[in-house]
Length: 129
Image 1: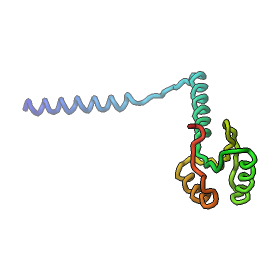
Image 2 (image 1 turned 180 degrees about the vertical axis):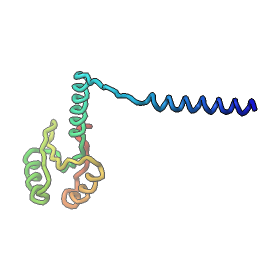
Image 3 (image 1 turned 135 degrees about the horizontal axis):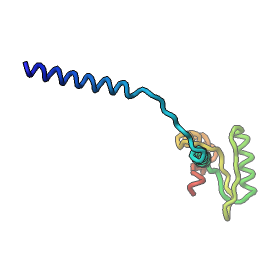
Image 4 (image 1 turned 120 degrees about the vertical axis):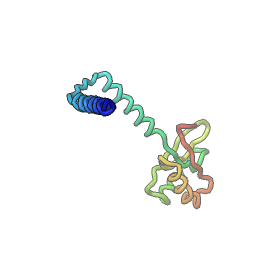
């Protein structure tokens, strides 16, 4: 009989604890946002988006003198009118680059098409040079 009473007391004890835990979870939470924290998060997001925008792959068609780079850019625009061309000067050469790709696989796919006409083309990531 005493074991039975002990078991009932233990069960009653656990039921009491469970009920008190249920009731103790009621309430409201007030969160105050600090304006400096919001500014820091916005600044971080801005910096991350700038980094994301600057990281891309490009296809370089040519490096050498300016006249040839301009001629190739014009010819390329005729063959691939939907593409953006860019001539960049890095001492001592002018470089003709086309396209901006976020993924290397996209760049490789397009490079295969370009290499049919411009055999010396290759992929690079300009900001990592």
